Image (cartoon, rainbow, N blue to C red; front, top):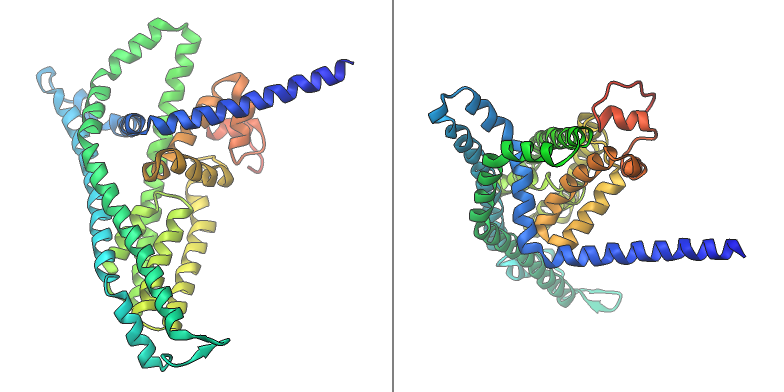
Length: 368
């Protein structure tokens, strides 16, 4: 009689946990306008805090505010880079695809496909419909990028203000945390915060480095085929590299689709094949070795986090998904009861290997 009761209790616990996760996701989604600027500001504050601290420590007391201004300038530069990149990319793509139906008709005429049939179906209306669909998709992508840039500019003021306040009050919050918790818990919280900030900086530097390398290789390959908009493709490849996995798919498909509409099938296939090879080499060999020792998230967790946070927070969620999971992983690793969760989220197979990367402890670890 005891076993059914125990099984019922376990099932009830799993059902309650599932409901709690769903309700939490819906709540996070409903609070998007508030949470996205706060989370962005928090992560940016952790990333640029060393700049503010380094400059402030070298200035006399009346000029210590220059450290905050320097860190704020870096934040503004980051916003400007992403905003300008997505705005110019969206505008250029929308302009290039605006005359897609006319280009398709011209290609059919040149190829002599206007009056031909495929399995009893006229090719001309089929390709025209495909062109219209492609234009709608491309226009939707371009409009989404432009709209996201406009929304990002609208939230820029509040994000910058939050970053400034967080950096200014960071020393006070450290003292408050020490006073509000016992010594061991306070040290654990400070350690987790410092490691999260360090891992976020490493993650952003790794993504920027891989983005630059990938963008350079993409542009070089596209240049061999005399494809237009090289600056746009390179800029979008760099920016979308901050969205692991899915970003590389989008940045590779756009120039292939453009080549298909402006060149010919064989050229588009060659371009697509070359970009695929580049992405496979970068994504499967270079990138994991370059940052695998620093960010210990499982590839499956990375992909799920992008999808999950993209659903919760939209496009900003695709950028914030991995940093959020890095913070959750490190925080869980610092709590004894949550260490199994941290191990499951990581790409490691033992607690020693997990601690060597996540807690930055000097431990022996065989394999990964």
